[in-house]
Amino acid sequence: MGLKQWPACERPREKLMRYGVKSLSNAELLALIVRTGTRGDTALSLAEAILAQEQGISSLGSMEPEDFRKIRGIGEATACTLTAAVELGKRIAAVPKRERISIDNSKQMADLFMEQMRFLEKELFQVVILNTKNEILAIENVSVGNLNSSIATPREVFHNAVRKSASAVILAHNHPSGNPEPSDADILLTDRMIEAGNILGIRVLDHIIIGDGIYVSMKEREYI
Image: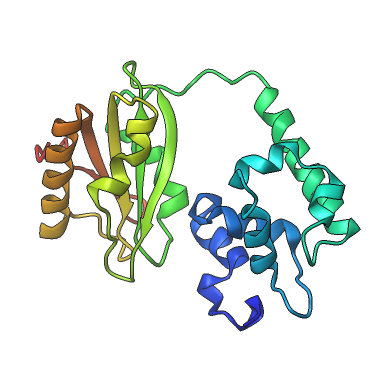
């Protein structure tokens, strides 16, 4: 089945526009670069073939146009596009990093997410990974829920926090209703994440719930 036959919400381009680029898998990101498939292969299946190289996504860093062209369905134009995208990524990575943002209060965190999350039609659960100085190391999309709820597990929340040797995390999700008042499920989820974080030695500093122009800090409400 071609990408055009997929449900609109599952197509890589639509997912990117609605949920952000971090919601896409490696294969979906590559599919957007590949753009079109062949008679027997979709853009996504071509992307999966590229990722099937021995070293997976790491292989892209050393591949030249002729290497891409060895993959069935990859022509000269697509091979050049992929090579250019990889080189651009290398150049971006080589640019010195800007000073990291330090988080001092819940309003600062809410402001960071408000415009991105206030109008989403589904719940998006994100985790902000912090170092010992409360500087942001990364912001990760953990899960996208249905119209009324998101699903997040400690494994998903703390996976990259552990990999990045994080000192703390801040949780954030939106309420599509526009009302940020925490539900019983939100409170239970927060307790569960605090417990998991304590085991891992990673503090949960706050859980921000985004509504339509307003927010609730679970820390300010003394749930944390």
